[in-house]
Image (cartoon, rainbow, N blue to C red; front, side, top):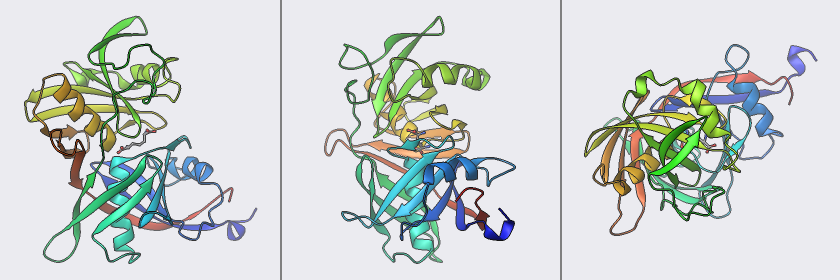
Length: 290
Ligand SMILES: N[C@@H](CCC[C@H](N)C(=O)O)C(=O)O
């Protein structure tokens, strides 16, 4: 196939707390294989280089629909940083003039509020992430226990105390000192691919700084270590409250930035996340397969 016969795909590279995805407009539904495209475009050197790909599609129940794919082509049911950036992508590309948007995901419809500066540029986005799920059957985990709260869990001959939370996608939260020294590429895959997790697992390693501040690193299923994970930060906030370690409002420091999380436990039961969003560059990708 010659260079000129390859399909050209306009894209925008965006990041939220350093969690970077390629964003494409698929409102006319003509991009054939998003999973393959995610693998292609996420590659460093040969692609754009990203944690995955997110497509904007039409929705019959919300302003837009989000489809998110990890770097290995697997589809995620929810992406906290992704949905914040996707709302900004729609606004910045004049696909909407709303600054409060509803976005359909595989985990339900979420609401995103864009926050602008005095020159009308988007600086941050706040999303209502909905209620955390603690039931192990729904996360899902193959276990007879109904919840995993500070549960002993043996991985690769080591015992960890883990708390399991779904924020529309599955997370294990582990508290330990010295997370900077942790060999995440070594241990992360043992959690991701453990046989008790039929849909694999995202895993967060966390240090509590104070009742209002934590630090974390994340190993994401399908993408490996990323600089941030929005659903992961929400899962950490919920787990930290449940384990009596923090208040319901917490700043989560990640390798690529910070996210402000609030669990409105008493009233709605929903988790809210706020953080910066940024367009890095736009371009045109010449697909090798489409
Ligand atoms: N980084 C994302 C989560 C992306 C999906 C995740 N790897 C999964 O497969 O569940 C976020 O910001 O939430």
